[in-house]
Length: 272
Image 1 (cartoon, helix red, strand yellow):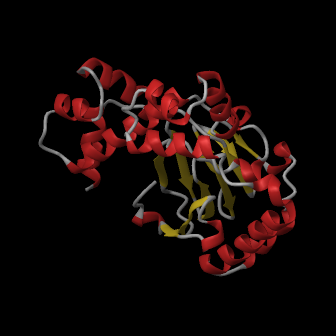
Image 2 (cartoon, helix red, strand yellow):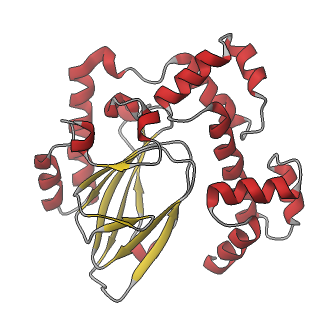
């Protein structure tokens, strides 16, 4: 979700101490509109999140969720979000590899799942917190309360909530800078750890393998190209994004995004 004016979509930046952990906060709001159902797609980028929902139940990939607080694990495919009735939701989006500081569970166990705090035994996300957030009138006030809780958690747990392990952080940045096109064997040479060690770090802190994360970065780059370059042939876009032929581009893009590059470009043009 990047620009959803019909849902009052707003993005807010975290305070300085939380910048290593929190990518952003977001809010969507819409008055009750029972005759209107919005379908949006949340494309995967390797991060995890927390959603506080104070409106009508949300549907993720066809499954209805009534809980006021949901924890969204990492995903390898786009998630279909359906909203109807009154919409009032606030979310925290963690950087890839950073959410485990608060979620504790190895993220491989949360892959592709939408869970409640009770499922994860997360005292940080209490019913009392959700109730207090619900009565606050503005997003900045809600975020201020959330940040107080997050900072208190970091202080209380000290060394248990260190930011991403250095080798892991370097690997994440390296893959992102390469837009998912770099050879993992070259990365291993730079950070001087084994393939097995790197795989273990990724499974624990990201929930997926370095190869899967590279695919997300590559398809994410392709999405941006498809939205910004509406004239170049799809084959050229695919090559620029690191796919070795058009069949590879279509197959991998559809596996992650759910539709073909051509369909994605058509939808982007219609939305524009």
